[in-house]
Image 1 (cartoon, helix red, strand yellow):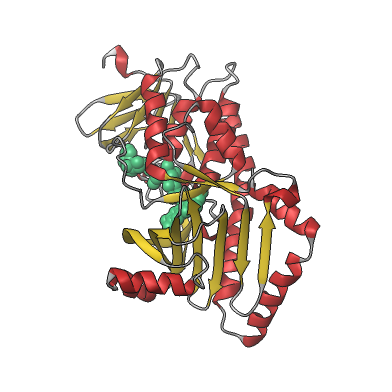
Image 2 (cartoon, protein in one colour; image 1 turned 45 degrees about the vertical axis):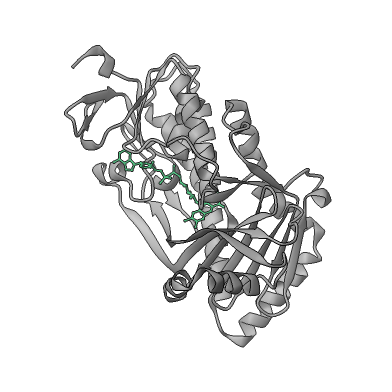
Length: 384
Ligand SMILES: Cc1cc2nc3c(=O)[nH]c(=O)nc-3n(C[C@H](O)[C@H](O)[C@H](O)COP(=O)(O)OP(=O)(O)OC[C@H]3O[C@@H](n4cnc5c(N)ncnc54)[C@H](O)[C@@H]3O)c2cc1C
């Protein structure tokens, strides 16, 4: 093995979570490798169908990393309007909580590219475009074997390889999965009327529809619905699909024009049975996935990265120090559990056709709307 192949840490997967972790470690003395078979390509002008809501706390952190820059086309969200399926309503306004915004909406591909630009420029990070083939777990040092035969040695392997994590499977870490029986249909539109930085969400008998504001008169939608309805929506001619989205959104923004064709993503709640093993730690979707109705998936991933990077800064300890990694896992598990519980409960509450539950959920929503302190508490958690 050549000396170049010895690292302090190897990150398997260079999606948003893995790339952000590498970048957060850029000024450290450690040598870090990011192994990714499909690095991002330079984005063109076309709008990416993958659009996410990012919390202000994560955006401030990404700004400090230099990744949230002019490359990222983002729209602040100043207010959110939520409607139940039987008259319930709930409104959040940033100003009411003394905030300048509730979230930022931006395309995934541009942020991904920007993170990679940063990590490619860092002297201590090596990006390796390769498929993985195996792992040899050792006593303190471990080897990642690549499909081209190269072997990368490191004290810590990081699983950032997404919901179907290969590395998690290599470590024999089980997974609890709950199928939400929903597919998220995403698409982008131009709107007739300005959105004024307001995000909308409608809880409907067939699922949840969200309008997320994009720069200009544009929105991205996520319509989480049954697999059958998702298939039917995707099969509609563009004009008909557009009318269905406008109608389901109560024509709030006037006429819509389709910008990117609909794509569907099956939605499952996943939770790794362990976040840590000797020589291994999981981050992002490799550790957890959640229903997108609260827009928290990558926000949880970035919060994993923030905590892990911060705790790894204690240079007295080796990267793979188990006590430190276990402390990370314990703290992150709390945040993930509460987000999974709240989103899962909301999804279930609104899935029921029971008339009493329908009345309760709509009344509960409107009652919550009258409780300023409760709304402020909810907003404070969401902005982290
Ligand atoms: C419809 C929908 C809407 C969403 N909306 C939001 C939102 O509004 N806000 C939000 O916070 N989140 C949202 N999410 C969640 C968000 O998409 C994910 O949480 C996020 O993309 C996960 O990033 P990641 O880097 O952890 O994993 P991934 O994006 O899956 O990246 C994993 C990377 O690992 C690589 N890889 C895979 N296998 C290997 C291997 N063997 N070796 C090396 N590399 C490998 C892959 O190529 C990939 O680049 C949404 C999700 C869906 C489905």
